[in-house]
Amino acid sequence: MLPEPQPLLTSFGRLPGLDGGKKMSKSLGNTIHLSESPDEVKKKVMRMYTDPKRTRADVPGTVEGNPVFTYHDAFNPNVAEVDDLKARYRAGKVGDVEVKTKLTAALNTHLAPIRERRAAALARPEQLKDILFEGSKRARAVAIETMARVRDAMKISYR
Image 1 (tube, rainbow, N blue to C red):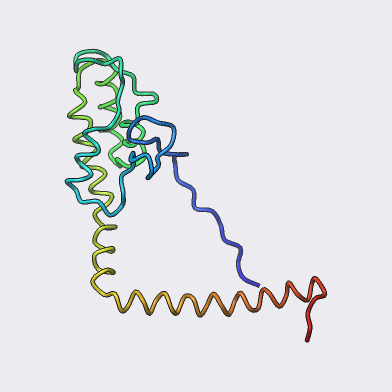
Image 2 (cartoon, rainbow, N blue to C red):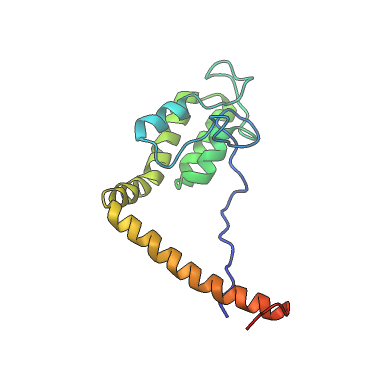
């Protein structure tokens, strides 16, 4: 019998869309794709929704429900920096540009190894095709065995 897959859980529930909407959706255009360049990530982060009541950098802002800080909590490993930004944001002592610039750096650092692996994989299309064919072959063998057990259990095996 095959081992039962275990869930891989993150420390956060769900990321909001870049527009502050409840969900991130490719069709809504409020996403950051894993394949995007550092410049594309920067452009998207700089357009991110923040606190609408905060009209200037010296106005105290709300961190709770602010997508920029949700992304900081999820992707910025420097907890001290995030806590400092939150405190300064609440006190009206930091601008959105600085908060978003630091988020851009954290996201690009997080995405760099993914981009490298993607580029290496795309550089060898024949190897990708071989991997896909091998995976299909393995999956087919497991599916045949599983369906035989299903037919036996349902007593519709015609052997």
